[in-house]
Length: 365
Image (cartoon, rainbow, N blue to C red; front, side, top):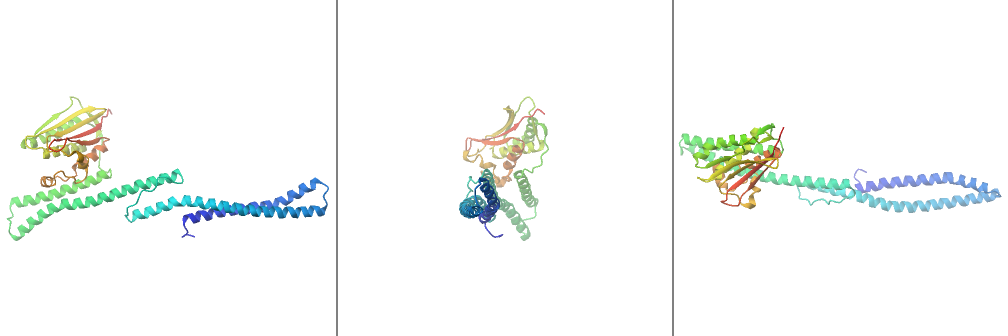
């Protein structure tokens, strides 16, 4: 019985119910009908015992035959309907089971049909389709992540190996420059691991946040002030345009500083000597808007969303040399969204500069 298909079990269960009902009907009819017939026959008067006997026998044979034929016809009709019903109920469940097996084997599956026997089946199919799509996307992201991570680690590891081999063979002297290069590559890998950990936490909404009422204008001024020496040293002009009043938001000040630092770091790295960088803060539609603009190399219009993906690089060779992990924008967007806001990029195209816009709802608490 355990190995029977669901459709067979449903059919047999309904058939058992129908058979029980038919037997109950026959037994009840044959138990009470003859007595009722005899009582009414006697009340009619004028009938002899012989006539009553023949009439009773005729009634019993007639009702028995009629009940038998009616039971057979009813069971046949009910069996057909029960089979169709059982098949209708079991089919979406079997489809779901087959699809679940395919997902477990990591095979690509087509979406289950949205229709179903009932609203509950439709809801189940829709939920499964969403789950299967999410699992497929996660698997694809996992493959890309492993490939990208191997690519990111290859360069610093190759550099470290080359220096260690050269020092071991006596080809290169153990100078301060050699040790500094090794130290830089190790720090680069540490930074990559740290960023990767934060990116994974961001995907799982597990980033540590301590929300309080903070002035986003003051945070932007403080972060920009920290980048001023770097910009001056590289002959890049950093300008800050802020409101003459506080811009209160509910957020984690350290995480918001992290977002702005990441955007300004990108702007500094992609802006040429003599270029312009601007941080502008305004308030629009009950939101504080922070725009970080630069006059750098810009972003192709068709890649304005792609740049927020893990390990994405506009210029791979350049970012590998300057230490960018390719995870900063991914983390920055996740932090902004945890604050109930958004982070978008805009650019007229290559060599047209870029603007990154943060929007976070204001608060009066």
